[in-house]
Amino acid sequence: MLLTGTFVRAIDEKQRIAVPKPVRDSLGFPDQNVLYLAPGTDGCIQLFPENIFQELAAQVGRNSPTGQDVRAFSRLFYAQAQRVEIDRQGRLRVPVELAAFGRLAKEVVLLGVRDHLELWNRDQWNAYLMETQPRYDEIAESAFGGPASVSASATQITPDSPNTQEELRSSRPR
Image (cartoon, rainbow, N blue to C red; front, side):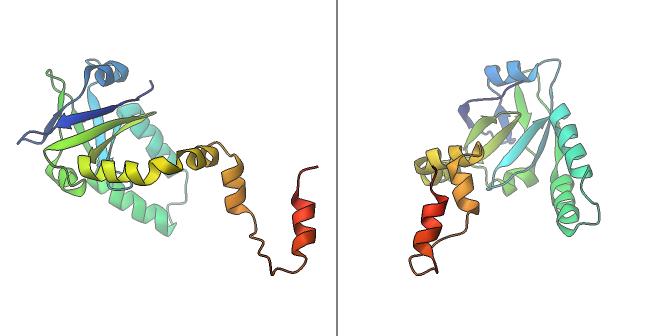
């Protein structure tokens, strides 16, 4: 299952959103009509198919349960995560608490992000896109382990560093 695409959707007064047919097809609807909604990063709401949600739980479970960040993440994430079903009309209802978390308004953006979906406030998505799109090449290189990821972890050399010229010469490819 590969989830892709960007879909602008209306959210009705009952906090329901119509899931586009291509997304429902990718999810295996109607046989697979369960999603888990949870707080995401950058202010979005993440929507996970049941098998992906279980894989995520297993991944978190491999970390030490005594780690402070693991405990905090588990509490914040799982306490707010909720199981929802896609109805016969292809809609899902966003729980009120998660709609408030995502600051959902009348129009939202539903994104396919490889193995899960993200639901964004439309204005917040547009702001995120405006901020990050200009850095697409740099982000892509970093995501694939290219030069941007190497330079981010490299020691910074400044003109007044001792032996700067020697360091620069020795770091050049031959």
